[in-house]
Length: 303
Picture 1: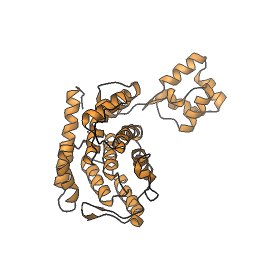
Picture 2: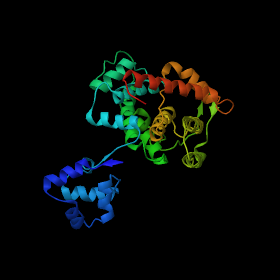
Picture 3: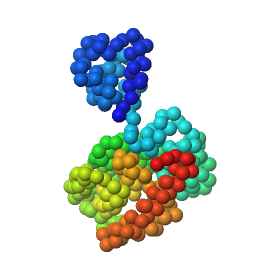
Picture 4: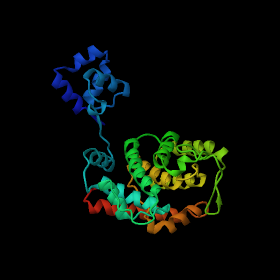
């Protein structure tokens, strides 16, 4: 559902009725009926109306998600609420996901960056650790914005670009920021998919996943494991994979999971043993879901 409260307000302020709006812009009666029913208009129609009313499209229409957690995240993000779910998700997921990959920033330093846009760096903190923390905040925003869209290669590549642009890796001629890897790599002693085969394998993975009639937490965990085995990017696969999992949990109204840095050994074991034993990774992700539930309980949010 969507809310046209902004549109109704704009029309009232300018003394324009829906019938007049329809006549002046050539909108069909069906389009006007959608406004009354709270149904989603096409992007072109919204932009056309916004141009006529000389206002921004986002001020006219607001999407209302049936997913309480997603809607709460959007609302808190919009008003810049401090100390809520959006605030804590940003800090806790950015800290844990980056720390799993070797970031030297502490949770307190991560919190300081998010809350004040400053940092007491101390000794030996790489600039990329700071950049990638800020980028992770923006990546979560992107996840919230695109949560209800079907998962696509474009979304996945955009997440990688958001995370890795402007880092030292982006200065390497062979490092493809926002695109699949150009060089073969080995992770944890395990050979990953060759660059030439990555596009086809990613398309096949997405096709299998998006064709499922019902997606549960188990399907999301399985996608995460298979994504990490393909290892489609030169670097940043773990963070992108966990952001995809967050997006898909929000898309399918499933409580998300946060893999804590303290559980990374169990997490890595689960990924490496996935083909033989799916329980290790499943249990770790379900434990991460319990971590998210504890955060909801702490903030007295019903789920």
